[in-house]
Length: 544
Image (tube, rainbow, N blue to C red; front, side, top):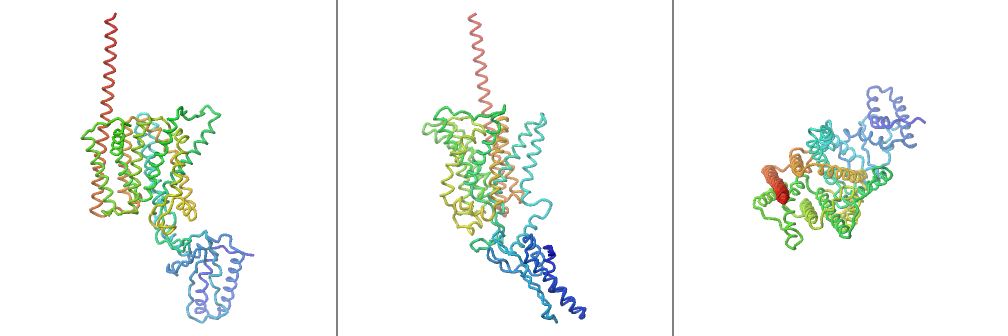
């Protein structure tokens, strides 16, 4: 049996009602012949539909495209799993005989199962919207990653030239750090997980795109698991080669306890930071995390009060700079919220980011108390991934929290990370793949960061970290495709720029003072060592 292509079926079905009355008017004698031909064509169409079309999805697409201009977009979507009614082109009221009435178009509409998100008309609307969003040379999804990828490529090329090797490492560091920050913000907050117009299983129709997958704790645990698996693959792959690798041996029980504590605090730090990115922009996240020096200083002083840390001297200029930087960060956040700091929603993201900041400070302070075990990236994956994942599991399955945006329509106003993951898997398995891929990116990023930081001087590392945060925050204000929402209007955007510039100035000057203090301390130590050596030489000369 001859089977027509889906596009031909769609064209014949949509044009058939208009052909007969037109020919009846222009050539009355040909009506019977034309009617018979059309009936034969429609019978063939019906038979083709009955026998099954090899590509039902493409046929549906063709039908929708052919009728969208004539039918409009006002039809009511059908429930999930039910074929949407396709509007037909009404024939003009003319002398059309009963025996030449066209077959209903609904005969050839293929069944739409649960695998298609909602009814056909929302799908058409979604496609038109996507075409408008992605108009131009590059899709909106690609645009945020252009600058980081350029940084990675240029930095790698510069590292091959010995004279500019150090600058190449800084550029590569910027590319890697900005790529990871942007990717995590995209996966957790801006990626379209379920498009607008989709009919959910509860019958609700999404009016806006459902974005991101705000399951920061589950994502962190997943990253730890993926990193551990990658470490095991590498460990086994090089076992019988000259590059055989063995993690650093933990000799005492104290070292084992220290690693577990570090793993849990590290997990809290990363998980809270990931969680915050599902609610707030990268700019707000970065400017809050720029306050790490003051929170670390306060953590160290608090531990010193209970004799667990050495008391840090109070230097008025340094403390003043840190306080000014924190005030500017608060002003930036206030302006980003347009002066409306209400509980719930995005404010939860701010609290999570502050929690991440405190965990990061505690991690640095504990390094001074428990001692730095000097673990590299592979050692960290070997020893910290399992305790960190176990620590996060109760939070993933038991702790429910308010969800942002359209997520409340998918499940409930408050959901656990596990419930969010299940809903994401139901509607967008691609997003789950992005979550797994983030684990691979995280593993590569940690190796890159560890290698770069340990081959740069402390001053270069400090400069690189501050520059990366400042540059990425500038980018979020200047580039719309990096924003989770449009910039606020005047006067708030002016306050944001003022606060950002003052914050960068304050913490950059503080970093400069810290670097100078370290250089002075090293110079004094070198001078004392030289004087001690001179005294020993003079003593030996006198004895002779």
